[in-house]
Length: 109
Image 1 (cartoon, rainbow, N blue to C red):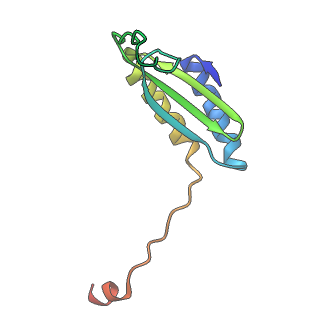
Image 2 (tube, helix red, strand yellow):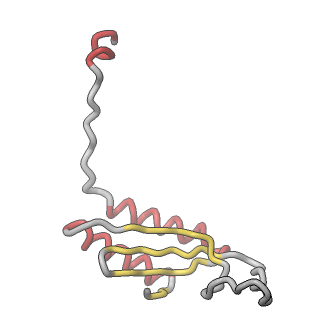
């Protein structure tokens, strides 16, 4: 998995979304990140220190292509604004779902 800066992640996510539009889909996951990249120690060992500030770990995946970035707490609002623009631009080809009314409801209404 490639750890990128926030700007690089957004630009590569745009490319990933465009390539996934033709072939497949892509997934994005967001979770709280405490900075530890190792598993929790076993019982009897000293515990990991708690972080002073949590971050967000954001991962994107499409097939074998994987991207990730860590967003600091102060930059989350700015990043989410840019992230929403990327998603809106890549979701313009969605098909509208036709709603089917139940015959009983159609007869009453």
